[in-house]
Amino acid sequence: MLQAINLVFDYNGARVLESVGASVEKGCILSIVGPNGVGKTTLLKCIAGILRPAGGSVLIEDRDTFGMPRKELAKHLGYVAQNMPVRFSMTVFDTVLAGRRPYLAWRPSRKDLERTAKIIEEMNLADLAMRDMDRLSGGQAQKVLLARALAQDTRYLLLDEPTSSLDLRHQLEMLEVIATLVKSKGIGAMMAMHDLNLAARFSDTIMMLHRGRMFCSGTPSEVMTPENIREVYGVEADVRRENGHLHIQPLRCAGLNHPL
Amino acid sequence: MSTNTEAICRRYQAHAHVRTLFLAFAILLLIVATAIGLCCGATGMSFWEVVSSLLRDMGRGHSIIWMLRLPRIVMAALVGFGLGLAGVVFQAILRNPLASPFTLGVGSGAGLGAVSVILFWGGGFQTYRVACGAFLFSLVSATVIIAVAKMKRASSETMILTGIALMFLFSSLTSLFQYMGTMEQVHEIVFWFFGSLSKAGWNEIALAAAMILLPFPILLRRAWDFNLLASGDESALALGVNVNRLRMWAVAAASLVTAGCICFTGVIGFVGLVAPHITRMVIGNDHRFLLPASALVGAVILVTADTLGRTLWAPQVIPIGIVTSFIGVPFFFYLLMKRSREYW
Image (tube, rainbow over all chains, first blue to last red; front, side, top):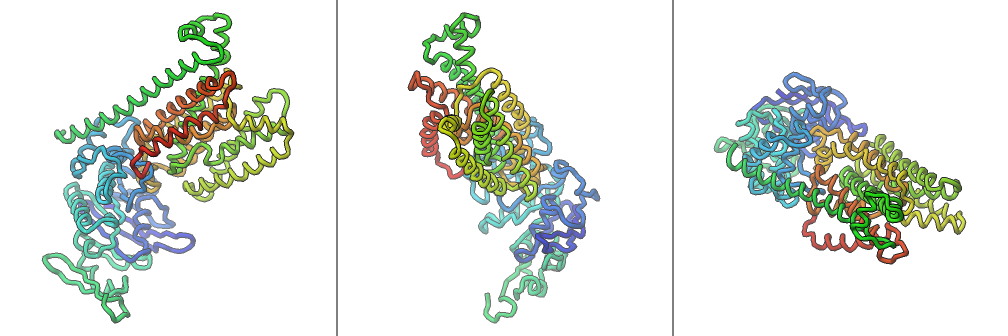
């Protein structure tokens, strides 16, 4: 299990996270939702070891990650950023191969190359393998970043808004890929998400953050209630279950009479 | 392994093969450029005369080759190698295609050091004193940048802005010192800024070689980390790279290389900016190949520029800094125009 316990993070004297905890089992998806600036990305970065929290701890299978060397941590935990700054572009193969960095000697072994090629094939990126990253669409690039995290062969993945720059079709495709990987490979995934409908549809558990604290957590139907959405987002919403999925329909901003 | 996976591996290996071939081609080009450089000069010598002068002590020919032409060419190759190498490192750690060995004020620091020595510490062993001044002041820039970056987190933006501020400060001080100098001193200062290989002797070459070549394997070992930096600090951190420490060490190593290049030859700009880009356009951004290839391309450019500088207007020698820009800029423009992509 990947567990974050009582994480506290301050930025320029202001408290961003106040005793936030989160956990995910292997083979499950936890989505972290909440309004802009509530600390979703900060929480993921603290768990990934990119930001150093002022308090709390992160455990992987009961082992504290804070004392772990970076290279060691990268063998347990993969992190996929929202997007990748493309300045000096590499090929798709080289980018995915770079995910093997925690295991790589200077010259990649046959095993590293085969593992990279296999992931590229599984992610349906074979036709793009030798294309430069800057020549990919947003959806393709996001898939490559996920492929790179998979090349790390970690047991847990942290995904920061994996659908943020994608159109509707690619959002669904990306989340289908993630859900399939999580179930088939037994990976545990934590995702920061904006879209409540997609979060409800693809997550096993959801955690709602409010003002830097955990507001509630549980199954999608426990968390996605009109009351919680009103309290956290300030939006009146209608929540219904249709065809086995939760549908969240925003109606109006709380306190305003005109509909959205 | 499935057929598809095998096919992807083969395509990658073919791609890697092209990059290895480019390295071999660059080495071959350097050998050819060196051979041509050895044959060209005020005293006409055929290729076979050069070869026999190199191998046997045959009076005048031997002296011309061993005392005049070879040291120049070896120094040109070393300095080009160093600038091409340092250029890639600075562009990688600052994630900026405009970065060069001079972006962080290392060049202007060296200039201030040289000017200070020429003005305030003239006399015997002038070459070594100027070199010493240039070397020490160029490392001052690197030290200040590392100190500031350490205090304010080592972001590339912090480093670039500190470097630019230092560059303006050093340039102003250099101008002030030039204003205070005599005609002879100003003449010497201007000549130093042109860049020149004429003072290269074997002792200087040995010193420069140590500063330029020793950091090379250290930098090459971190090639994967430079690759990961291209995808952002956070991604690199998440993949196990200690980004801040890497930046500090890389700045220190690349500044040492740059200082080694500048201290005996003066400021030879442009190579450090264009050699990485020319190489990148052919073999891409994998630093395992880019670091040595860019260094070799830099060496080829400088050896060629030196040969042209010695022969175009013989017996006058055009300073290498000027020739480098004259041949490098049009070639670079050509590559820029040919390039169809938005990114590097």
